[in-house]
Length: 175
View 1 (spheres, one colour):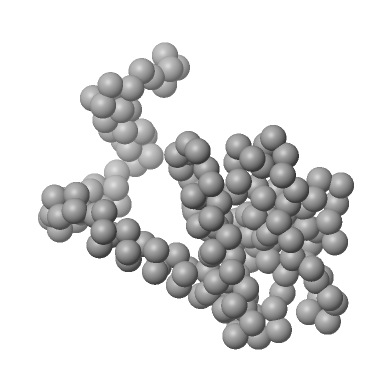
View 2 (cartoon, one colour; view 1 turned 30 degrees about the horizontal axis):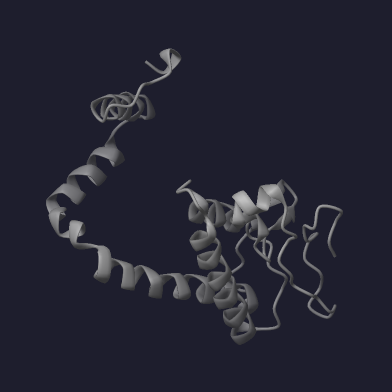
C-alpha cells in the first residue's frame, strides 16, 4: 500500500496481492532517480532503499532481486551527476531491515540483486578497469592493515591530511 508520497508501506504478507511500481516522477526523483526505485519506500526508521515485498520462495526472490538490480542500474545510468553512495545506502538499509537468511524469499532477493550487479561489475572491471592493474596486492594489504589497527581519531587525522594533499579545502572546524 502506498502513502501520499508514493512510498510503499511496510511489506504485506505473502498471501496479499502486491503491485510493485516505480514512484512518481517529481523534481526530486528526476534529480535523484534512486528515490523512484520500486523497492524504495518507508520502513520503521523512515525512508529506505530496501523495502522489497516478501516473495514466496527462493526462485521468486531471485527474480525480484534481479529486477531490483536492473532498476538500480537504470537509476544509476539516469543520474546526471556522480553523487556516490547509492549502493552503500541500499546495503545499509538492507541490513537495517533485518536480514533473515532462513527466509528463502529474502535470501533469493539478495542473491538476485547482487548477482545482477556482479555481472555489471565484472564487465566494468574488464572493460574500464585498467587502472586497477596499478594497485598492488601489497598496497591493498597495507591499507587494510592500517585501517584495521588505527583508532577513529587516527583515521580522521590521516584522512584530513589526504584530502588536503588532494587540494580539498576543509571546513575550519574539521582542521
